[in-house]
Amino acid sequence: MAVNPLAASSEPNPLVPTLSEVILVVVIFLILVWIVAKYVSPMFEKAFAARRDAIEGGIARSEAAQLEAARTLEQYQRQLAEARGEAAQIRDAARAEAQRIVDDLRSQAQEESARIVARGEAQLASQRSQIVRELRAEVGTLAVELSEKIIGQRLADDVQVTATVDAFIAGLEASDSTVAGSTAGTSA
Image (tube, rainbow, N blue to C red; front, side):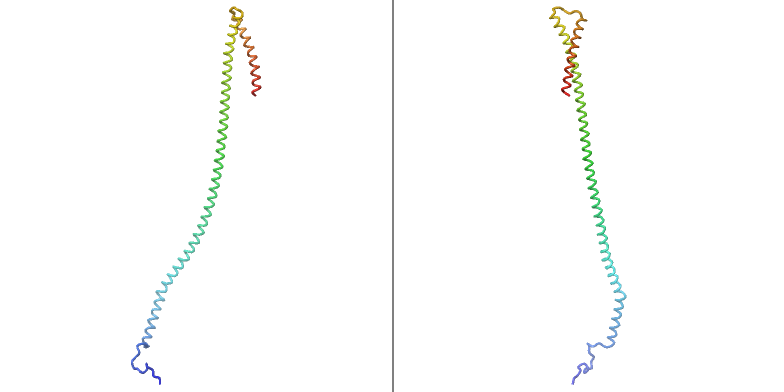
């Protein structure tokens, strides 16, 4: 015969709850569930929603930042290409300006050289004509003196001396123009 050890004792078992205890625990449990559902759960939901929004917003912001960075990079590359083009144009313009300046300086130097040569030739021609005049006067005087020595008398007639000197100078001019024409023909 099997005897139930619990039934045999008349004392209540401390491990087995009574019906009133079970009902009290169920009521307290339902009150706790209601408090958690009413107050704690909405706060968790708000925290989760805020966290979800922060994460989704962060992803959206990072995508927007990536698009902005790509746009900025494209704009930077476009500006860099424009700057390089402008630099090339400036460099070409500077080279052209330098060449123009060199050409201007070269033409100015050639003009100055031509002016100096012309001035030198004019001075040479002036000095040559002055030397020729001096030589003619001196040759005329020497011719008169030589004539006086050859003849042995003084030529006192100034008109005759002047005519002789003029004839001699005319002969020199004729021979001089012949020599100058042949020299100019060979130098040209």
